Image (tube, rainbow, N blue to C red):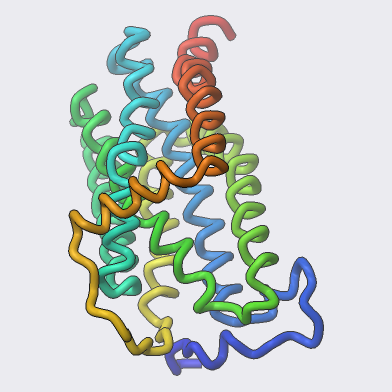
Length: 265
């Protein structure tokens, strides 16, 4: 029980690859469950942050800026984070990202308990949590092939997507319940606690050591290579255009929902 999780234990092939077969792998199952809990905490924070902003500054602009502070870091830092995930040790990078989010979430919760949260503090904390999410996403996706055998890779990716949607369904509702009973500080502190599971599982995970046959890339040349790849990949361009076309306008509705709930309902 006290032994660290090893790559060998996670890579034992299941008798038959099916949609749930990756969950037979101990490491993948532990990371999947911990990430599910952490994502629920993140969605709870989104509800709590939006609702708290309607209290400290009910201006539609300020309330909408909460959504902007949540999503802008992913737009700004996802590409640099993906490059870093290919250059540095992914396990250590994930540990740093999780520790970053733990500190920020805990600090916001304590400030809320002390009554010291201003609109600027709330936006800054939400932005910093978004930075942590942007740091975490690329290396988390990149380690999936290290967690499951190749025949189970497609199912593992699908399960990760399923986990995101489960947390998206549960998190806001649970956040609303906690918000009603205990207020925003409890939501923020629960978000901080939800990070601990992922941090612990990643800390205990010992991936197999890979031998590099080529020298590591440098940061800026790797960023340029990523941009060139997008320019040369029409299918990826279509995905990006469709995503931007939806989320730029769809996020306006999400951003103002706290005001609709507070003033209209």
